[in-house]
Length: 321
Image 1 (tube, rainbow, N blue to C red):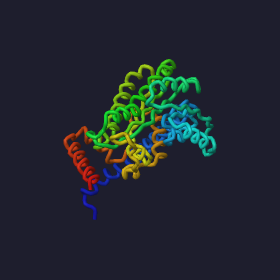
Image 2 (tube, rainbow, N blue to C red):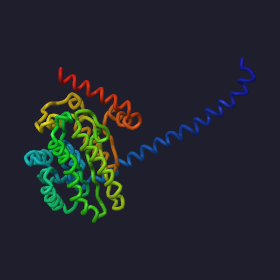
Image 3 (cartoon, one colour):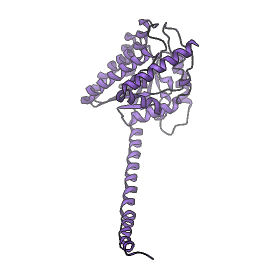
């Protein structure tokens, strides 16, 4: 038997059920629909932005060349190894797995550590299509070693490749972008450009410098409507650690466990492509723990420094054992 109090509350319950079924749920689905439409428009706009765009990529054999080619971009592929670039072009042009119109890439061979070569390379790049829409500074070198054992020449070599080279190429191509009031500069940095870990001093320093420079560039280029994107990946399963240099400048030659367990280059390249298409300003492409470490460095620096000291002790112990 229903009590009088319960009978009084029934109309209220029915009223709430009615409001929920007739107002909140449709509103919820409507919001989801608007969000889905917004994401779809972003995706379409990103695809249109990259299609037929003139894209210059340094370190193009890393995988970025393939995804930008498949997106229909007009590519200028840059690097030191002309043979590897020619092989990449043959691979790209032989592929028919894309649904958009593609363009045969150009290649420009030069060394980022040679400032004189960069000026000449920039002129050659501009001759390919007459202008540049997007510059992707992707080439880089890694490093492993202790600060006390590392020669200053090694520090300079890493900085020349990872920082001064991309800065020089960017400065060489910027005037043509400013003249057109159109362009997009992309810097592939690293999660180590936002926090440092032991035995990576030269590499982390070069990436911190990269982050700072391109953050400044973004602010200064706003008046010319030129976009600047800094992308900071975590570990990627490439030969970066194998080709890293050591304290004396020799080749490291070891595939680190963290690198071997990193994300696939294709997956990261797709994320880079999406970030560029959406004109994002600053993107972290790392797993949860490295991403949290970036915030820990800011919010709890004492704890972060203790964890890094502990990491250094463990890594040093494992090398000496």
